[in-house]
Structure formats: C-alpha cells, structure tokens
Length: 181
Ligand SMILES: CC(C)(COP(=O)(O)OP(=O)(O)OC[C@H]1O[C@@H](n2cnc3c(N)ncnc32)[C@H](O)[C@@H]1OP(=O)(O)O)[C@@H](O)C(=O)NCCC(=O)NCCS
Image (cartoon, rainbow, N blue to C red; front, side):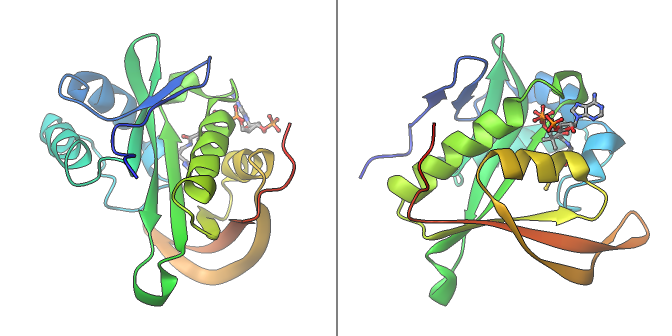
C-alpha cells in the first residue's frame, strides 16, 4: 500500500508531509513554553532554527507517512503524527499533536486527530490508538473526546516535566470504528 505521500484536505486545514521551507513557521509556532510544557522533552524549548532544520529533515524522510504538518493559509502551524508500536505492540500506535497558540480554539486539532485516526485504523490497520495527556491539559482531553477517544486510566506520577511530577491520562480509541458523522 502506498501511503507515504498521503495528505488530507480537511477544509479548515490541510494535513500534509513536512517539507523544506517549513522551518521558519515551525520555529515561530513551536517556540512557546505554553506549547512545549505539554509535550515530551524531545520537543525542544526554546525551539531554535537548528531544531526546526533537524525536524523537517527527519520528518520529511524517516517519518514520512507517520507525521504531518497542519497547514493553515499556506503555513505550517502545527503537527500531528503517529508513533507505531513495536514487537507485540505493533497493532497499536501513539497519537501526538500540537498547534501554535495563535491557532487554538478553532477546533483544528480535533479535526486533525479525527482524520489521522481514521487513516490509522482503516488504511494502516492499527487496532489501538492512544494518547498520553499530562494532568491539567484539559484542552487536550477535549480534543481527544471530540475525536472519539475515551479515558482509559491514569498513570500516577508517570511524567516528570519542567521540574514537576504529573499524572498521565491515557486516552484510547479502538477499532472497529464507531459510527461517525
Ligand atoms: C491541545 C491543543 C492541540 C488543542 O487544539 P485546538 O485546536 O485549540 O482544540 P479545540 O479548538 O478543540 O479546543 C479544545 C478545548 O480547549 C479549550 N479552549 C480552546 N480555546 C481556548 C482558549 N482560548 N482559552 C481557554 N480554553 C480554550 C476549550 O475547552 C476547548 O474545548 P471545547 O470546544 O469543548 O470547549 C492545543 O491547545 C495545543 O497545541 N496545546 C499544546 C500542545 C498539546 O497539549 N498537545 C497535546 C499533548 S497530549
């Protein structure tokens, strides 16, 4: 199955591969503690031009077909992607996403997560999609609920971020697909 070059036109935004030229917009939107504080430390803060170069290089080659830029008005304003499990976890994938703060509150992330989830379950035949949400990230919980995920449980004190211990909420969506509008 050829899926590497897939893109999704969702009306309000486009999910498409990261590409050379995205670096300045990426750095501008990503260089924000209000974004980074809810993500793993491999999402750097501060987010430098070198970080943007490295990400675009990696995302547009090794991660092609797994991670997508969220494009609005011709500009990459965030990202969404899958991390496939390995070995016995190979039918599972972790879903991750972020948006520059200027784009929050317009329902873009639920749209993107919904589209990526359908693709992962239908075309890539994953059975279990999950996302880990740090305690206090209510916006992200809302995104997942709107994209058909349910809260499976809480991993207590699992996260050490920004010098703080936090719980991690595990949200899941399983195949087969529920009826969707
Ligand atoms: C989480 C995130 C992707 C949400 O994306 P989004 O496109 O803004 O999502 P929505 O527009 O659906 O808003 C989600 C919820 O955030 C809240 N929200 C949105 N805009 C808000 C604002 N300006 N102020 C306060 N709350 C707001 C609302 O409760 C909304 O839920 P509702 O529609 O049921 O009321 C975005 O905030 C983000 O990138 N955060 C940092 C990175 C992150 O947390 N990634 C996920 C890690 S698990």
